[in-house]
Amino acid sequence: MTTEVDTQSVSIATQLIGLDAKWLQPFDVDDPFNDKLRLRGFVCQKPDYRYGALAITHVGEAEMAQVVLATPKLHYPFGKDGFFHFLPIKSIHLYEKLDGTNVLAYRYRDGDGQWRLTYKLRLSPTLRNSRWGPFLHM
Image (cartoon, rainbow, N blue to C red; front, side, top):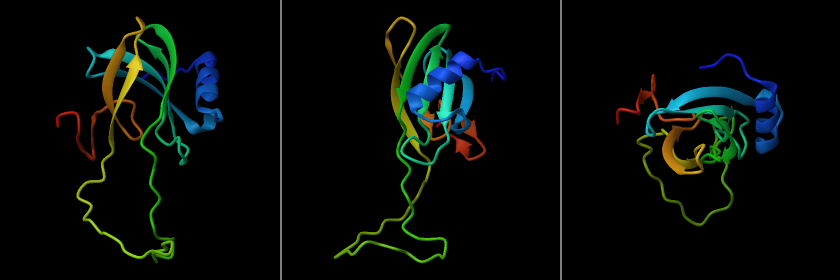
């Protein structure tokens, strides 16, 4: 990952996402599903509807400004006190949560304007193996 972030890329990303740069985490990764095509940009860290959104600034060497919204974060139905707080309801269905991993398929345009399909974890621009699981290998 590149440690230097140029100010023009930051400016583009803040305009795309609509947030101050303090909410953006830079990335510089190879897309494992598209011949390791290099993606550069920022992942949004603000816990609102943009949480996990990507502001892609470069694909390969081409400047290709584009936004990818991520799966919205669902709020838990309980407060810090541990008690559940629901709106008035008539019935409810409960399901066991077997896996909490969020994998999103998304498309982006490459430097030639072609659509590419890849996958991401909530706060990662591409699918990868991590301490939480071997997601790329799955």
